[in-house]
Length: 378
Image 1 (cartoon, helix red, strand yellow):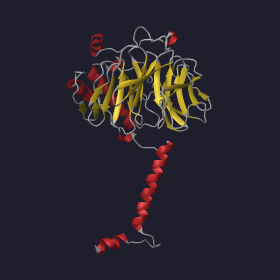
Image 2 (cartoon, rainbow, N blue to C red):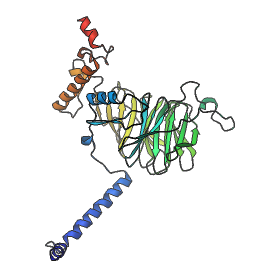
Image 3 (cartoon, rainbow, N blue to C red):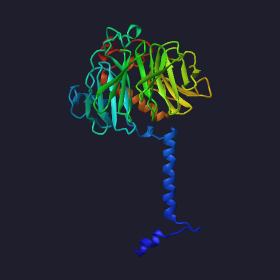
């Protein structure tokens, strides 16, 4: 007891209690981190912690879990997790702030809730087809198509309000209660397929973009339409929010637009001539964001420059230069070892799929050729 008391009363040369200083520093750091988190300026280093499943892991998981309707736990691969539940392509994914629950939507119109820790899945009840009521609006150009209206393209979740929003080709935004898994509201205002949804963190403000070239603002607190912003000259593909009333959108008109919603103003940014169409976007800080193109280019943008601050071409291995190793163009800051690892991974995947190494440049021109056909031609 005497030793513990002496330890508690230990003082530095300036006469300050060392233990109290440590506790004060920890408290100050915690308050600082909380303030940065609320303001949206907190950053976490995650890239070096992510490990993607290899081709062999995905193939083993596919062999072990062939039944898509089986509600058993997903197959755990050696370097990740493979989940199966949708019959057709997954088109949207939303993750809660606590990283505990994920929601996915797909082309066949199903919604699945996933538990991140256990991998357990729960399917939402399928809603009936939309019936237009002339007395409530939503008809004419806003009426759903006669074919393919069940396809869902995007989703967004608001865990504070226990709400999940989905949208797709029926031109509607469906709002669900995540506790009862029942639809509580339906918004009809777009005149084309809704391609992307997002909810501003900590608020009930929701943004949606569509093939009708508009950006719309909604209030989940009042369950009401708020405003429509115009500017894009073609289909709008994606929207990303930040903590302030600022969003960024990308569209098929080859523009990236930074919107100041409260002021109803926008800044227009354009990629370099010859670049691909912008298809996705995400904020990295209040004044910078990244975009992805259909040609495999990832670009970093800033509000201080009209052109991209930096671009990386072929970061996912597509559109490589002719004569390059396995069609792969290394990112700007990659090392030779990383390029060799990417080449080896692609070669292993091609061997597993039965694709000839002679056809590795097929995305540039021509189709893929199975290994047997190449051998016959030789």
